[in-house]
Image 1 (cartoon, rainbow, N blue to C red):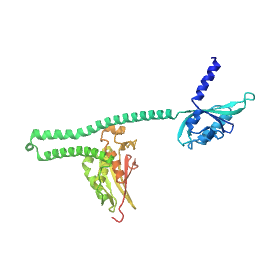
Image 2 (image 1 turned 45 degrees about the horizontal axis):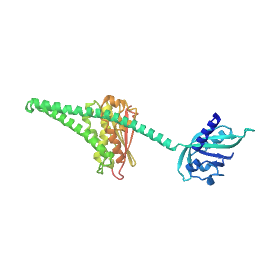
Image 3 (image 1 turned 120 degrees about the vertical axis):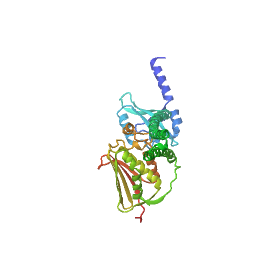
Image 4 (image 1 turned 90 degrees about the vertical axis):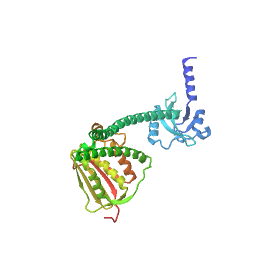
Length: 371
């Protein structure tokens, strides 16, 4: 077998294993091979004389075909991956080559031959591999974030736990009767405060799990918004003193009422306010502005601000500043996000124009006719 015979043989094998069709200069089909019939579902009778548009997929743009016609009319070979459609309406991706066949005498195009290869399975496998790699990368990121979170969370638990152990040891070592009453009260208050802090973190983490699985229950009632905020502000007096920060509360003149779960609403406020205090330089402002049927609560601080305002709402995402300062577990704002969603409370995080730090805005619906 000479070289030309071998090349012709290889070409025949290529054609036999490809979806082959010929068309006239207007794109009307003049020939199809067995693979064309098998893959597309169109018989020879249904194909011959019809335009190649019978394979056109609705989502394929006109630009693809304009480029195709321009290329082959210029006598060039067109190559492209094209999404096509079978007779039964199912999709298939075709690696398509369209070759202009020239008249040997005057070198003008007399017909076109299209050689297609069904690469649907290949692309699907490639897609699944890419999907699996993405999933593995995401899982790796989650695992790393979980490790960082657990490290941070245990650090937060360790601080109050050490206080409980050390103060308890001091009382046991010296005996209650030998410790002055004021000091004894202060030690017991510190033990209680540390225990409650630990309980709050653990409880919030457990409740977050319930929130995500829609198993958290709510007790809805109508309550005075301004009075509730005032209660939360007063509860954070000790924390503000600890961080050398002052909280300024400016409420609305008239009492505003909302319908929500007062306990959960206080949890939302508490998480936001405690974050503002911890990350402030010296000042936190709480403003309440009511207008028509809505009320906005803005909690702003004079801290350094937050660069990535979306990431801080994720449980296993910590900003660089948060990781560096280690002032929180990273649970609080993730908890806030889910509670706000369930209680239909809008939230927005922005830069505080007045104080320069972070401004956390909550928007709630007012109860009409209550004041």
